[in-house]
Every structure is written in structure tokens, then in C-alpha cells.
Length: 290
Length: 272
Image (tube, rainbow over all chains, first blue to last red; front, side, top):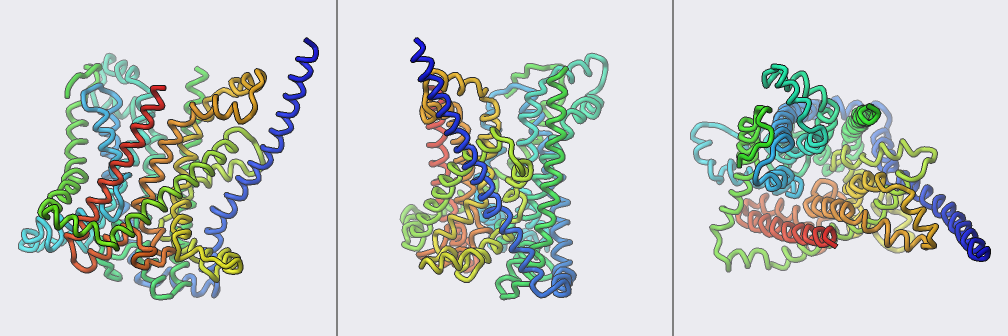
């Protein structure tokens, strides 16, 4: 009996020692991955951008083509994110508040753009609206340009970011159920009052989180936009495409300077994301205490 | 399509209708148009396009590198998720926040940054050169870029599941004499596997289609380091819309079959 407990505690000790070693190894390798894989790329972007000092750095950023690329990127983000925000709320609403046949198919379809290559996302719009596309002749007759112009860039951006907001909201709204909305209705609120005063405050942080992810992707989208943009400098060049052009012209310092602008935006987005995530967690924790 | 359970809450027709119209106009009809366009080809023509050696080489490269990157992330991602969930250590919060960097960073920026690091004369690449091999402009470089871009998938899908497994379960198993590997195999693995597979397939699907981060580091040599999305781009630049469409259809169908298989595997595991 005693020998059994003895060997059991010995093996527990050995396991603990193994655990400490394993734990240290894991923490060190997490740090290694972090430094080599995440910090080093950031470092190289900034160091290449500042290779010739701040003068050339700001020169590349304030160059007219870079400014117009920045404006186009902001415009495309400004149109496509609100579209997907409204869609995300509507989609999450019908998926999470009701039961109906074909719901799982609908959820799969909402997620579909995630598994389609961005290049294909661009291609399908070229096939529809390009000069040789289905609507090509009609568009030409009416003098409307979609491909190689802003509408095409927006369409491609919308396509690749369709799922982001819906994806964040669906699990959140499913967890929250329908009781609060039902109570609001029974107390006499109409549909919009219920939505503004009950649903929206509940999903606020999840919504912000989804919008942040959506913005990040919309701002950085490259493949899909590259297909439909036509790369006309100063007109249909977004920031990521501008980076590519500069890089391919061996103007590396300028390419990395513009890239570091995108990098700063990305870090800002990460901070926003972290902030909205902590608010969601705080809400969850306070809901758990009640 | 109308078995509502909550008749008190309004907006079913409106939201479902809006969702369906939006999805149809922006996603389903355009994707359908690609298949309609491809249907204008006869089987023989379609086959001739997709069985060209250059297409097959790109197909193999794209799926092999995406698979390799997903496997690497399956391992690194699991270890990272484990470390972040189970241990508190200096810098944990920073690492936790930075895991999502590849999602926030535009892929073109990731592409040129990784190329600058891993090119034969780059900060890291020079060590590889000393050892006599190349990272950038080879399939290794492509795998590396894909691993970077898809890093968050496995970590983020596994983390919540791992946080939900009570430590007591493992401790109980250990007290009953199970060795760490046995604990892993019999306690953790069955609980983690479905989420792991989800993360794996997300990473894989994203890797197959990824374009921006890869084209800079790949070198883009036909037959050697040319990925499938780039080949679509090349065909488009030559105004070969039919060729581009055929490759697009091939890519979608192959990814779809693979994702379906992973999904089936997941259901099999959930049953047993």
C-alpha cells in the first residue's frame, strides 16, 4: 500500500519536473515565433523605409500618386465597410433570431467568400462587367465604366469582406437569445425601437470588432483589387497596389515607406481590435456574475 | 423557409430577404457567371486547358505549399495556443495581441517584408545562403509566406476550446497514472481535434487562394514557382479570359472537394 503511494508520488514529481521543462521550452518557443515571425517583418519594413532618412521617407508618402492611392483606398473602405456592416447585421439577425429550413446552407453561403481566391473574386467581375463580359456591350453603350474604375474596386473589396461582420455577430447574437427583444416587444416597443434600444447596445462591441476586421481586410486587399483595377497611376491605384508598382520598379525605399504607412494602420487596427475584444470579455464576465 | 419560433420578434422577412438578395447579387450570381462562362467550353477544350503542364505544375505547387503551411501552422499554432492559454509569462499579452498581425497587415506589405528578410542577401536569407540553400524564390519561400499569412487561424480556433477544458481533467488523468503523452492522446486530442481541423481547413483554403504575399517571394518562374492564382492573372493579362475561367473553375472545384472531405472527417470524429 505505502509503496504504491510512494511510486505514485514519485511519478507525479517526475511529471512535474517534466512539466516545468516543457513549460519553459514552450514559452521560449512562443517568444521565438513572436520575434522571428511577427516582429522581424515589422522591423524590416521600418528599417528599409528609413534607410535614407526621413526626407526620402516623407517624400515617398507625400508624393501625389501615393496621396491619390491613399484617397482611393479610404474611399473604397468607406463604401464597402458600411455595405457589409448593414449586411452583417441583417444576416446575423435572421440567422440568430429565427429557426428556418436551409439555415446551415445560408451560413455556409455567407462564409463562401473566405474560401474563394481573391484573384477569382476579381475575375468574376471582369467576366460580368469587363469589355468582353456579359454586360460589357451594354455598359459601353451607356458609357458606364465598372472594371478599371472605382465601382470595380469597390465590388471586389466588398466580395472579399462579405463574411467579416456577420461572422462576429452570429455567435454573439445566438448566445444572447431572444428574451430581451421579446420583453421589449411585450412592453410595447416597435421593431426599430427594439433594435436601437435593446439589440444594438448588446451587440455593440461585437459589431465594432467585426468592423475592425473588415476594415483591415478591405484596406489591404490586393489580389481581387489588382485584377479589376487596371493599375492606372493616380487614378485606380490603391495603396497596396502602389506598393507593388514601386517595388517592381526597384524603388525599394519608396515601396517600404508607403508600406510602413499601411503597417501603422495595421497596428492601429490591432489596438482597436484588442480594445473591443476586452470590452466584449468584460461584458461576458459581468453577465456571468449576475 | 418559414418556421419561425419567435413570432413576437419582427424583421424575419426583411432581414432574410435582404441577406439573400445581397448574397445573390454580389457573390452567387457572379460566381455562377464564371461557371456559365466555363460551360461554353466543350469537355475536350476544358481538359486541354487544365491538363497543360504549366497548369498542372501550378496546381501541384499551390496545393502542396498550402498543405505544408497548414500542417506547420497545425503544429506551431497548437503549441502557441497551448502556451498562451495555460501559462502566464512576461510578454504574454503582447504576443496574444500580435498573433493577429498577419490578418491586419496588408498581404502586399507582408510579401515585400518577407522577401527582404529571406532573399539570398537578406537579413535571414544570408544564413541560408551560407548553408547552401535558398528560401526566397523557391517553394520554401512560398510555404513560408503562406505560413505567415495563415498563422492566426489554428491558434484562434483552438484557443477557446483549450480554455474550456478544465485542468482537473488532465490532472485526474495524470493522478491515475497516465503519462503526459497518454493524457494528450486520450484527453486533449479528442476534445481539440474538431477545432483543429476547422483551423486547418481555414488555413488551407486561404493558402490555396493567397496571392498578395506570395508573388513577391515566389520568383514566379513558370513550371517551378508559379502559383495557380498567379497563372489566372497571367492569362487575364493576355486577355485569355476562357483560360483564366477554366483555371478558376478547376481551383474552386478542387478546393471544394478537399474542404468537403475535411468536413466529412470532422463529422466522423464527432460521431465516434
